[in-house]
Amino acid sequence: MKNFILKIWKDPVLSKVIAVGIVAIISLLYVKVISVIDKITFNTALNELLDLKIRVIYVLIVILIYLGIKMLLRKDKGRYSKKQLRLREFNQLKDSQTGILFRWGVYFHYNNGPFISDLTAFCTKHGTTPLRFIYNKCPVAGCENAKNSIDEYAIKNYIESELINKWDKT
Ligand SMILES: [Zn+2]
Image (cartoon, rainbow, N blue to C red):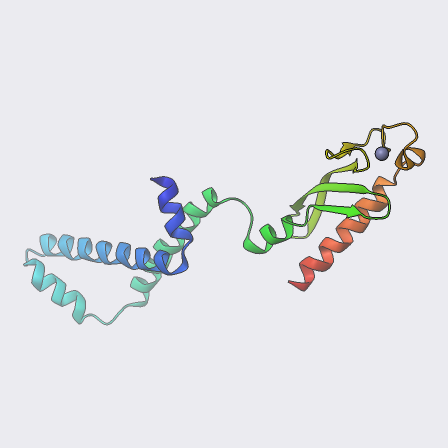
């Protein structure tokens, strides 16, 4: 049920329809309460409400309710914005010259700038499964990628530079 609500809430049109529905229900409840308090019929109270020019305070309350519900649901939607999710897909790169595959995770600072973590290198020269590096080099003796260890810091810097560039462009 919760997932269903989250799913339709992600839909920009449906979420607005639901928001309007919620506002309508709240409005009707408001009319009902007023009719009871003022001891008038529901219809009279409704007419009185419709006669009122939309007050700023009323609009503000509606907006606050809308934003409140949206924020509550956003917490479950995951921490990433659409732009961030798109950038997170850039999480691996293969150096065709050396056959080294790099994988990493993309995360974001509080000011939204991207950075990477868990940078791992793999050698793709030994069968179908990329072989993870040990001590920054391929663990297979005699492999080209076992001769020199990679400069993890330089690679991290290169990838992050790419990410920052992509982030600024989107
Ligand atoms: Zn290797």
